[in-house]
Length: 93
Image (cartoon, rainbow, N blue to C red):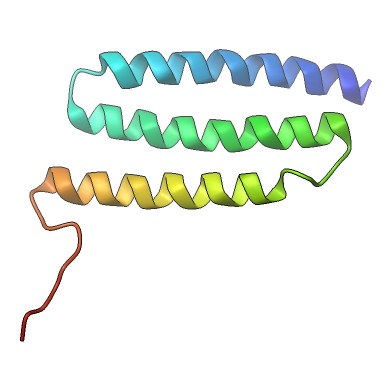
């Protein structure tokens, strides 16, 4: 029963990844694309987590951590850049 539900959730996450990718390409504004990229990263974390549940292993824990860090840092950097600020603030005192 759990395996069937896990496969159904995996298919739903696959559809969500495709829809996020379409929104990331087609988005009306750059801010919508940034949000879609962040949502794509979060959905990929869920996808890898479901694969871990189906395979009954902890091998991909590092992959989940790296995806989370990259999604967070990428969203912050792109948002700061689009806001018009400097991504890395360097003081030249």
